[in-house]
Length: 331
Image (cartoon, rainbow, N blue to C red; front, side):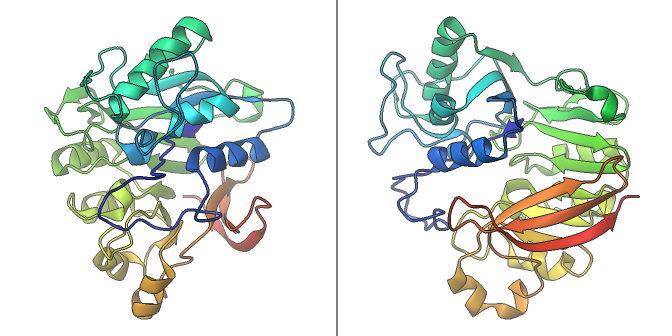
């Protein structure tokens, strides 16, 4: 399973993004495909599931800037649509299928290209697409050797403005794209992992946190660890041992330095690419973190009683292990 495939290659925005890896010329969807292929289990060649948390370009791809077009389908190749060219995906799960809101006049928009990609490949290549199911653990399931992993579960807790409050699914009325992100809790034994895309509204974050209602072992920080939804809402309930953040802008807001200062003493924080210029400017902040660059891999031991965090070299395609943290004992 893969969640999101952000791709900002040739994006003309005024803000400076973190550097592309393994080099400045690397095309993100091709880098992602190489990573997936490298770690694909023997005997497999496809992703069973791809979940698009929401339809922003840093999650499904930027389709302008001279991106190549699909020869038969009416869409450009970037992010998930490019990834599909090299790694087959059996099923895509998103927040709103089949009711996409699309500006048909903007052929470079992420929603336009995603919709066209879905239409072409469901019709011609057997791609399955479903709307994310909130309040269920039956949509994303163990497909191979399930008896060896008892208790494995992926439970949908939010998506498209719906949220699980602990007993039922409620409509929060949220209508902002980030806040409508799909979110789930992955459980294996005593290990819990939470991820929520860019879900950043206080109402829905509070509903979901109270619905889960317990400490968890690890989580992905919402919205690149930006603070508009108050990081404290989630931390107060989850008290995660490990937090992983996909770095975004070359600034002090995403990830947010105040959050790092406030929580790094009680949470082990891992980041995929904080610019060296920021690290050198604020060593007292980033020195609190477990890493500031590299692939971050959480490996849960059989049975789910403990886990480790591996940091891999992202400067080439060898994926050498630079550091190992743990073991962390699951509660």
